[in-house]
Length: 187
Image (cartoon, rainbow, N blue to C red; front, top):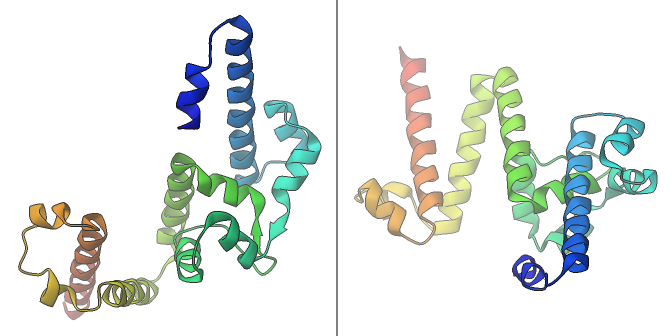
């Protein structure tokens, strides 16, 4: 909504320039976060994005899990799920740049895709099985039951029309993937 209001407020050259400068700052901030995530050094990031060194240093600072949950409005369970999906975290906490990337849906998806791609290269079958089981258990807890009992009778088209249809479809996919792995292990 703010973005729309900012566009509405463009009435002359000065307001247009102000809008473009602010948009450029935000974009370069996101690019700086992305470059930090990719492991590039501060001098290069500063040169490419024109963001001050102090901002880059702040983006590298770590926040506690509690601070991140407060800032993003997440529960502990949701934060742990994001971490399993590739959200950058370690024993020191979560770096500011990762939080900024998570706030932007495009960068968030990109960060998760890269993590998943890397994980698939090194993950054993047993690790994948355990990961699937944990996710299935979370869905069973969330929906208070087993997939087959609750949604197994529904065609996929009807599943997508339900509230949380994407979650339910992904739950079904996990069950199917687990069955495929079990079938391959039996062969």
